[in-house]
Image (cartoon, rainbow, N blue to C red; front, top):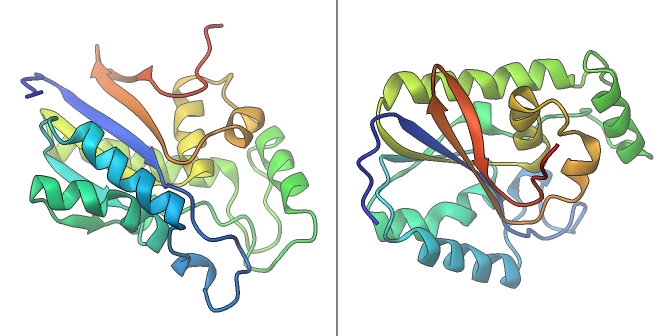
Length: 196
Protein backbone atom coordinates (compact mmCIF):
# COMPACT_ATOMS: atom_id res chain seq x y z
CA UNK A 1 0.00 0.00 0.00
CA UNK A 2 1.86 3.08 -1.22
CA UNK A 3 1.54 6.32 0.66
CA UNK A 4 1.01 9.70 -0.95
CA UNK A 5 0.22 11.52 2.28
CA UNK A 6 0.74 15.27 2.20
CA UNK A 7 1.66 15.34 5.88
CA UNK A 8 3.70 13.09 8.15
CA UNK A 9 2.47 9.93 9.83
CA UNK A 10 4.25 8.54 12.89
CA UNK A 11 3.89 4.89 13.88
CA UNK A 12 4.79 4.51 17.55
CA UNK A 13 5.77 0.87 18.02
CA UNK A 14 6.10 -0.71 21.42
CA UNK A 15 8.67 -3.50 21.30
CA UNK A 16 7.71 -7.16 21.22
CA UNK A 17 8.11 -9.50 24.21
CA UNK A 18 11.67 -9.57 25.62
CA UNK A 19 13.22 -11.91 28.13
CA UNK A 20 12.19 -10.82 31.62
CA UNK A 21 13.91 -8.17 33.72
CA UNK A 22 16.62 -9.67 35.90
CA UNK A 23 17.23 -12.62 33.58
CA UNK A 24 20.73 -13.87 34.30
CA UNK A 25 23.29 -12.90 31.67
CA UNK A 26 21.36 -9.91 30.30
CA UNK A 27 21.80 -6.26 31.21
CA UNK A 28 18.45 -4.45 31.55
CA UNK A 29 18.93 -2.52 28.31
CA UNK A 30 20.32 -5.50 26.35
CA UNK A 31 17.48 -7.94 26.92
CA UNK A 32 16.69 -9.67 23.59
CA UNK A 33 13.31 -10.78 22.36
CA UNK A 34 11.91 -14.15 23.35
CA UNK A 35 11.03 -16.69 20.64
CA UNK A 36 7.46 -15.33 20.75
CA UNK A 37 8.77 -11.78 20.50
CA UNK A 38 10.88 -12.66 17.45
CA UNK A 39 7.87 -14.29 15.80
CA UNK A 40 5.79 -11.18 16.50
CA UNK A 41 8.55 -8.99 15.03
CA UNK A 42 8.38 -11.00 11.81
CA UNK A 43 4.58 -10.69 11.82
CA UNK A 44 4.95 -6.93 12.21
CA UNK A 45 7.23 -6.91 9.16
CA UNK A 46 4.61 -8.87 7.20
CA UNK A 47 1.87 -6.45 8.25
CA UNK A 48 3.76 -3.34 7.12
CA UNK A 49 5.73 -4.75 4.17
CA UNK A 50 3.45 -3.07 1.63
CA UNK A 51 3.42 0.32 3.42
CA UNK A 52 5.60 3.11 2.14
CA UNK A 53 8.14 3.98 4.84
CA UNK A 54 10.40 7.04 4.93
CA UNK A 55 12.53 6.08 7.92
CA UNK A 56 12.77 3.73 10.88
CA UNK A 57 14.05 5.02 14.22
CA UNK A 58 14.56 3.00 17.37
CA UNK A 59 15.42 3.22 21.01
CA UNK A 60 19.00 2.02 21.50
CA UNK A 61 17.73 -0.85 23.67
CA UNK A 62 18.07 -4.27 22.03
CA UNK A 63 14.42 -5.30 22.45
CA UNK A 64 13.25 -2.28 20.44
CA UNK A 65 15.90 -2.72 17.73
CA UNK A 66 15.10 -6.42 17.30
CA UNK A 67 11.38 -5.63 16.98
CA UNK A 68 11.83 -3.47 13.87
CA UNK A 69 14.88 -5.12 12.29
CA UNK A 70 12.85 -7.61 10.18
CA UNK A 71 10.77 -4.75 8.76
CA UNK A 72 13.85 -2.60 8.17
CA UNK A 73 15.46 -5.44 6.20
CA UNK A 74 12.31 -5.90 4.12
CA UNK A 75 12.19 -2.17 3.37
CA UNK A 76 15.93 -1.79 2.78
CA UNK A 77 16.14 0.89 5.44
CA UNK A 78 18.64 1.31 8.29
CA UNK A 79 17.43 1.23 11.88
CA UNK A 80 18.48 4.65 13.17
CA UNK A 81 19.20 4.47 16.89
CA UNK A 82 17.85 7.49 18.75
CA UNK A 83 18.64 7.88 22.42
CA UNK A 84 15.54 9.99 23.03
CA UNK A 85 13.37 6.94 22.26
CA UNK A 86 14.80 5.03 25.23
CA UNK A 87 12.40 4.02 28.00
CA UNK A 88 11.71 6.45 30.82
CA UNK A 89 14.20 5.72 33.60
CA UNK A 90 12.09 5.58 36.72
CA UNK A 91 15.12 5.08 38.97
CA UNK A 92 18.83 4.31 38.52
CA UNK A 93 18.50 1.56 41.14
CA UNK A 94 16.08 -1.36 41.51
CA UNK A 95 12.91 -0.44 43.42
CA UNK A 96 11.12 -3.00 45.61
CA UNK A 97 7.69 -1.67 44.57
CA UNK A 98 8.43 -0.14 41.18
CA UNK A 99 4.83 -0.42 39.96
CA UNK A 100 3.59 1.73 42.85
CA UNK A 101 6.27 4.28 41.96
CA UNK A 102 5.18 4.33 38.32
CA UNK A 103 1.56 4.83 39.37
CA UNK A 104 2.61 7.74 41.58
CA UNK A 105 4.51 9.26 38.65
CA UNK A 106 1.32 9.15 36.57
CA UNK A 107 -0.60 10.95 39.31
CA UNK A 108 2.10 13.56 39.88
CA UNK A 109 3.92 14.29 36.63
CA UNK A 110 6.73 16.07 38.49
CA UNK A 111 7.47 13.12 40.78
CA UNK A 112 10.40 10.78 40.32
CA UNK A 113 12.41 8.66 42.75
CA UNK A 114 15.90 10.05 43.41
CA UNK A 115 17.93 10.13 40.21
CA UNK A 116 14.93 9.12 38.11
CA UNK A 117 13.10 10.83 35.27
CA UNK A 118 9.70 12.36 35.94
CA UNK A 119 6.76 11.82 33.62
CA UNK A 120 6.90 15.48 32.60
CA UNK A 121 10.57 15.30 31.60
CA UNK A 122 10.11 12.01 29.72
CA UNK A 123 7.01 13.35 27.96
CA UNK A 124 8.94 16.42 26.82
CA UNK A 125 11.65 14.13 25.46
CA UNK A 126 9.27 12.10 23.28
CA UNK A 127 7.47 15.28 22.21
CA UNK A 128 10.85 16.52 20.97
CA UNK A 129 11.22 13.36 18.87
CA UNK A 130 7.82 13.97 17.26
CA UNK A 131 8.79 17.58 16.54
CA UNK A 132 11.94 16.38 14.78
CA UNK A 133 9.93 13.86 12.78
CA UNK A 134 7.71 16.65 11.55
CA UNK A 135 10.73 18.81 10.70
CA UNK A 136 12.78 16.11 8.95
CA UNK A 137 9.97 14.18 7.25
CA UNK A 138 7.40 16.62 5.92
CA UNK A 139 5.49 13.80 4.22
CA UNK A 140 5.30 10.05 4.45
CA UNK A 141 5.38 7.48 7.24
CA UNK A 142 8.06 7.26 9.91
CA UNK A 143 8.26 4.36 12.37
CA UNK A 144 9.48 4.98 15.93
CA UNK A 145 10.30 1.90 18.01
CA UNK A 146 10.19 2.57 21.73
CA UNK A 147 8.79 1.39 25.06
CA UNK A 148 5.43 1.19 26.80
CA UNK A 149 5.82 3.92 29.39
CA UNK A 150 7.31 6.45 26.99
CA UNK A 151 4.74 5.75 24.27
CA UNK A 152 1.92 6.06 26.84
CA UNK A 153 3.30 9.44 27.85
CA UNK A 154 3.41 10.53 24.19
CA UNK A 155 -0.22 9.50 23.76
CA UNK A 156 -1.19 11.20 27.04
CA UNK A 157 0.12 14.50 25.68
CA UNK A 158 -2.45 14.18 22.89
CA UNK A 159 -5.22 12.53 24.91
CA UNK A 160 -4.98 13.28 28.66
CA UNK A 161 -7.32 10.43 29.71
CA UNK A 162 -4.57 7.97 28.74
CA UNK A 163 -2.77 7.06 31.94
CA UNK A 164 -1.41 4.34 34.20
CA UNK A 165 -4.15 1.78 33.48
CA UNK A 166 -3.66 2.22 29.73
CA UNK A 167 0.09 1.65 30.09
CA UNK A 168 -0.50 -1.43 32.23
CA UNK A 169 -2.69 -3.11 29.62
CA UNK A 170 -0.67 -2.13 26.53
CA UNK A 171 0.22 -5.25 24.52
CA UNK A 172 3.64 -6.20 23.16
CA UNK A 173 4.09 -5.34 20.39
CA UNK A 174 1.66 -2.49 19.84
CA UNK A 175 1.43 0.07 17.01
CA UNK A 176 -0.14 3.51 17.46
CA UNK A 177 -0.71 5.62 14.37
CA UNK A 178 -0.39 9.39 14.70
CA UNK A 179 -1.19 11.82 11.89
CA UNK A 180 -0.23 15.49 11.64
CA UNK A 181 -3.53 17.24 10.91
CA UNK A 182 -4.57 20.88 11.23
CA UNK A 183 -1.36 21.84 13.01
CA UNK A 184 -1.22 19.03 15.57
CA UNK A 185 -0.56 15.34 16.03
CA UNK A 186 -3.70 13.24 16.38
CA UNK A 187 -4.05 9.63 17.48
CA UNK A 188 -5.74 7.70 14.69
CA UNK A 189 -5.53 4.08 15.80
CA UNK A 190 -3.94 1.59 18.15
CA UNK A 191 -4.85 -1.10 20.69
CA UNK A 192 -6.87 -0.30 23.82
CA UNK A 193 -7.94 3.14 22.63
CA UNK A 194 -11.47 3.82 23.78
CA UNK A 195 -13.93 6.56 22.99
CA UNK A 196 -14.52 9.08 25.82
